[in-house]
Picture 1 (cartoon, helix red, strand yellow):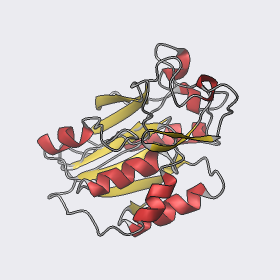
Picture 2 (cartoon, one colour):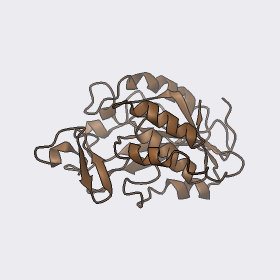
Picture 3 (cartoon, rainbow, N blue to C red):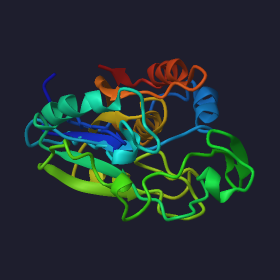
Length: 253
């Protein structure tokens, strides 16, 4: 895979999410699979990183790479550690790389421990709709929120912290879960003239998925590197996410 100058690699969530930009922005696709997308948004988890091979308008954007989503972490994604070497190699091919980092305050509303009698992976209703409850993870200032020690992306140009609003969870690198609060990534990519996003990271069916959908809806050409991502797969969520991404015009590499 060769990256052009307008491409970015975002690394998303517990691992990476990369985004790359092409020579010109493309309009978002028709609202294919939107109902499926909204159903998936009811269950979500962290991820993120991006990068490009050469100076260009393709920017990679990683999603979270905190330790809590890896082996022995509080919210470990199966096989997550295996993508680190792949992400490291991929990031070196991009001129523009972005990483996201989950940064939750203690007692965050998405933690099951904040709701007496509730357990991780149960769903509750909040102001903006259904919310999946998670184990306490990626708490600000803790070792679990730090990047994986084997992650080597010195060329990352931006780290986006998300999930720090106490009453709003955040999966996408572009918008918080209320679907109104922006992270600022869209404006950053547009101001720099980046038009294609290539994603990688954890987890494929949650943070990476929602980031990919939001990137496409924002008008960016969007691709996902499957070898540099891993899913959680709750009750078939991975297959549904891949189907919805194809329907939205996202390229699966």
